[in-house]
Amino acid sequence: MENLLHHVRVRTFREDDSKIRTGHLPRITAGLRNLAIGIHRQDGQTNIAAALRHAAHDCRRPLIALGLTG
Image (cartoon, rainbow, N blue to C red; front, side, top):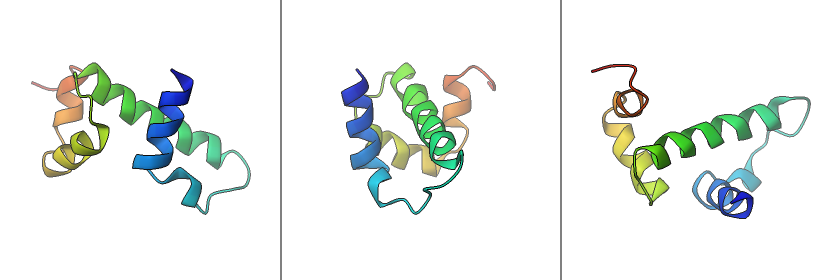
């Protein structure tokens, strides 16, 4: 599971190209990326890149997946 999660973060979010390298920020951004991946997986999405593009058109979709809005 961890290898798959890391692979998605590297390929989809281009984590290795990030300029964030000091302090707590790398861990925080990885956590936020993990949260985004988890929300889309919970929503039944298997292609995270496509799910992110779709969510970009309707920012309420992740909130609906979490049950925070109707």
